[in-house]
Length: 349
Image (cartoon, rainbow, N blue to C red; front, side, top):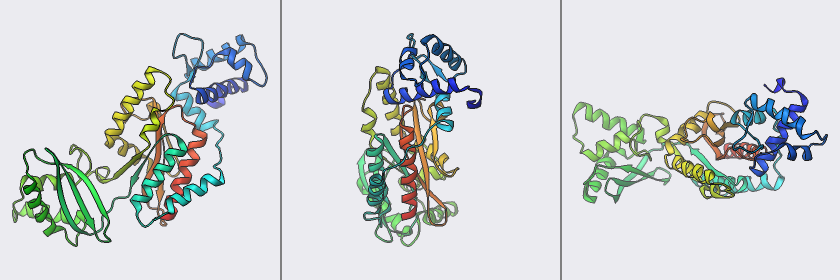
């Protein structure tokens, strides 16, 4: 589509997008006339804007004469017209230092990386951490509330992982202790996936009779979700870290922004959609950008995700890191931020 635009149309379209990303406000012909290097009359600009609107690249959110880019327009701009910014040496150093501090603990490193990325991008940041499938040393359950319990798992190397699971209503702390003892007898020295297969085999052969809780735990795969996902789904066993959700509340200028943020927080709480989205980013090398309605996983289309996979020394994809925010993102700055952070994490791993 970009080849179908003449130079005048490209110039005006770029100015509309640049101004919108900077201010968040609709751009009118009079404003454009003042900002263009080669000024055109407002009437000439309105004719070009009308053509751009008919092409589906811009639209008027209100009855005023101002226009903003559509999701299609933003995609065209990002893919064909965006001039990528460069990270400063200080930003690169900060990212490397933050990620390398105590880098023997992967989860801590990823938590620091997402916190830093959130601060630099002024967006919420998120990451899928690689699944830990080391042999387990110990497991215990902690009662939280009716229907919910915390699972504490200690693997070889003394890595500790905490996960929240659904449990049948009415179970007592004593029942949780019994379930932990039962599983510990089968988990020690095995990875969770190995222990899971062993217990499932016992169930199949009726060599052991597990109580309701133990069976429920096995079926859920000790996932962090609400128990409505298939335990065999890889996404169900991925760890998702989110930092900087409060950044989404900054610089809100209208009631519809507040409504968008409300839905976006709901999407963040419903983490399975985020995991599915980031899993999609594993399919391609480099940065993936999901703009607005292209991202059908969320309940509201006015959000964008910029994500990049990170890999180990053998180019095996271990996880995905990225940011989420409104479609009015500083793409030129955030894309290289995400890309560089993913490369640093991959190099450390």
